[in-house]
Image (tube, rainbow, N blue to C red; front, side, top):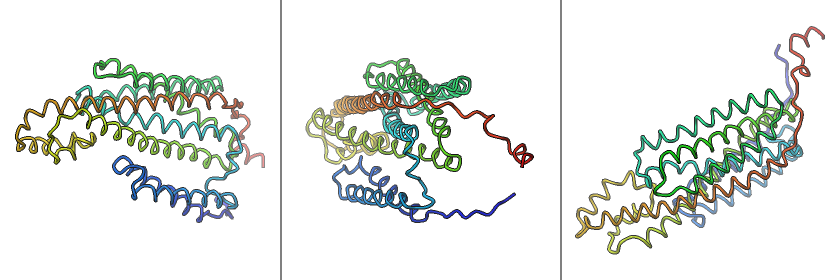
Length: 336
């Protein structure tokens, strides 16, 4: 039966959380196009930092906090939150550039590059099934987290070793390894957090780890995007043939716009004297610059995921709560 509750919504925490996340997401979204020092970016980052301080101060004294800081006194919840953030930053921040590598460097079509992502998803599903069954039968989640983080780091290292001559089979195998590792990790954080969180805070603790993973992926995409665009821009200017029309440089210095800008580029080169002779050198320069920039992205992703193995070593083992310890609602009602 419904029972009255004297819970109070933390409206101040809600407003401060929105005021923290929205400027952060906007700034990180604009970083690849405008750079970290842009007037469109750094004021938003400063605003997000100030709002974060205010949010933490509010949560420390709010009677019904949205994200109770007391949760993070538990080392398992703290480690899982950190690992979720790093997983989102290192894995999702780098994987999003795989289709660009396959289309721009390997020369596959958009459909083929999408199909080549399928092994990653299949590996993740298989890993989640195996990991979930393993934890359910053995109660061991720390070892699964360590194995998953190692597999994920190995997959990222394999991505970092890709070149213009990489076969599709190598790409598929790399995705399977990374996908299985990602699948192993997915249930670990949820199970570990729900196992130690107080009953009344279980939903908050679970959603907090998901929140940190989402923020981590956004930070990773923005940071790696900035790295890629900076390296690509420098390499293309070094490799590009002289005499390129200024109109074309707007499209050529941003690889993300190239696929959508082919008609405009074709029209520019057609009306430029000697433009047709520049097409092949330009394509070669774009491909080389894109390869070097994406290799750097995958390298940093591999470094982040390799470092992410360490926090999993400090994840404490805690016996899983047995169902027998949780009385069923009908049984509890009958007892009372």
